[in-house]
Length: 259
Ligand code: UDP
Image (cartoon, rainbow, N blue to C red; front, side, top):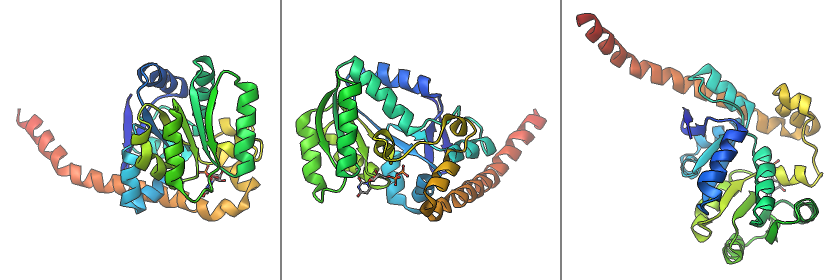
């Protein structure tokens, strides 16, 4: 998979179907586990501020650009990201694969009733999925949940605790379920259960999903202030890099002139 480095993280550069094909052929079909992090500008900014969180994200097999803000930063810097890959879309695609291949799935996260509603919808719409376990995201003993996941021998673990908890959980415990695809899904269970509505497709196509989330949940505005901070940090880092590369470029150009 091609990647592009933006600030301190390396993002998958592919479209959704390219990424899913790769995941299916090189991981799911071989029963090889993978840790997938879905990163939007807010998460990207948290990783810039917190080195330990950036280490947690960097250890993922795949970091997906789950936010148009990350793709926009790519356009302003190296311009190699092919497209946004939304965690929610990967979740839906994984459910289809899990149903086709009768895979074992564990659901971890969200409120009890939301988690139950997700399990109910999966059972009715994806009847061939083997739902091997569920846990809401508010149990105090995360170690116990990790042990339950390990015992259930899942092929896929969907972790919807919000950042940074979901990535920290996968990072700390993935050795217990090494053959599973483990992905952090933020608020995807709320959307899948119908508790929260995703933006209409036309707004998603216009890259305005973030605006819809803000309009429908104005209390997010504080969190969203991290989006411009992320943009500023990325552009600043890019300038510093350019300046430190500059002497090398000058040397290279003068070598060419001498030749
Ligand atoms: N959540 C959880 N346990 C916690 C805190 C949050 O399971 O201790 C869940 C919460 O119920 C919601 C999700 O994590 O379903 C986070 O949603 P949010 O909208 O914050 O995520 P985003 O998509 O913005 O990352």
